[in-house]
Image 1 (spheres, each protein chain N blue to C red):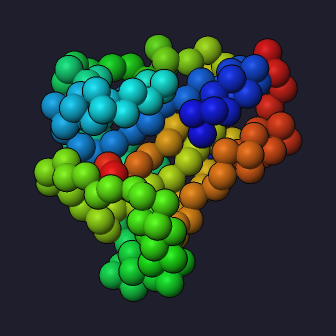
Image 2: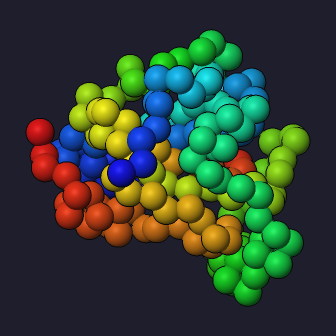
Length: 132
Length: 38
């Protein structure tokens, strides 16, 4: 996703990442990872609620697709980092908004492995928006 | 089409200060909600 940032910018699309972690936790995270995006905190999950992002069931969190994803990440050497209080059941999602707040695209993850790749998001954007 | 009041979402920056999401984009915004930090 980070490598595609320029492609999004070329289409007039800014990127912001929202986490339900506390700001202090996110500062520490950002010091380590240095994501080139705006990172925002929603510790009370009001924004998560506004986008209808619910908590997932146990069966979805530990689905075969999730286990396959984590197995792949472990094999690639990803280390589990502890950032304190966490909620593995909270779902995530990807949303495209215009300047009026119209929701042009919505993807609400059905399990932890269910995230659209950056290239798919660009395809969706190309079909929905006109470059400024 | 569903509409979101982007300027009313109570989001915080990394220092805990309220931010208006509307100030973070001109035309379009891809908003990515994380599951958890990893």
